Every structure is written in C-alpha cells, then in structure tokens.
Image (cartoon, rainbow, N blue to C red):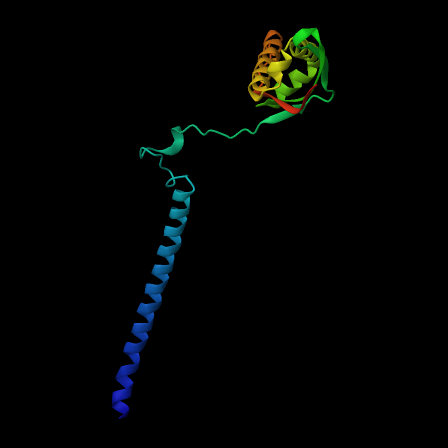
Length: 170
C-alpha cells in the first residue's frame, strides 16, 4: 500500500500549481479589463487613442468654465408712465452673468455708467408690458444689449445674461 500513496502525491502538487497560475492570470486579466472599461465608459476612450483611432496628441481639450456673477447691490428704482399719464413705480434688483472674472471686473469698473443706462432704459419701458413674463424677458434682453454696448465701447468682453433677483412694478 505504501507504493500506491507515494506516486499520487506529486501529481496533486502539479495540479495546485496550475490552478494558482490560472487564478493569477484571471485576476490580472480582470483588473486590466476593468481599468480599460472604466476609461472607456468615462468618455476617455482607450489610452492613447482618439475616436478615429489616431493618437490623442492632436485632440483639442475643451475645458468647462463655470459662469461667474456680480450682484448689483443697490436696486434700480425709477418711475414709468402708465396709461392716462399716471406715474408708476419700478424697482429691479439685478445680477450680471459672465464667462470670466475679467468681464465682471470691467462691469464693476463701469458700474456708474451701466446703472445710468439701465435706469434710463427701465424708465422708458411700458408699464403694461412689464406686467407680462414676455415683457420682463424682453426688458432683460434690452438690458443685456445696453450693458454689452457700454462694455464694447470701453473695449471689454460682453456679458452672458442679465438676471432679475427681484422685480417690482406698482
């Protein structure tokens, strides 16, 4: 019986060694595929390759630039003419939106001129038009054009939007 047990031991060691090597290869393959899959699904594609299969060196990278805002501290307050020549009151709190801090710095520098132009624009508006959402949107567009015209005259970059934080007409 001793003769039968001796030859059986070496084949068991070879089987365990093959199993260990096979498991290591499977783990390495799984890690590699997970890295490539993660890169692929995150939009980076395969390392060193662009969408057309060429090297990724020529690709232009677009960088997201968040908007920056400037609150106009004091409200724009003026009177507007209503039907029948009656005087109405308008008060607007504004924020300015831009793509860069430099544009907002320029708007801050020229704030007195911008405020003057915006108060004049608000004072020349129609009271009934400002009662509707479309009228307020049109006013915001005209205000954006006015501010961008002032900034353009001063050689500065334009704003993106004029936002109403508070809007009162009565």
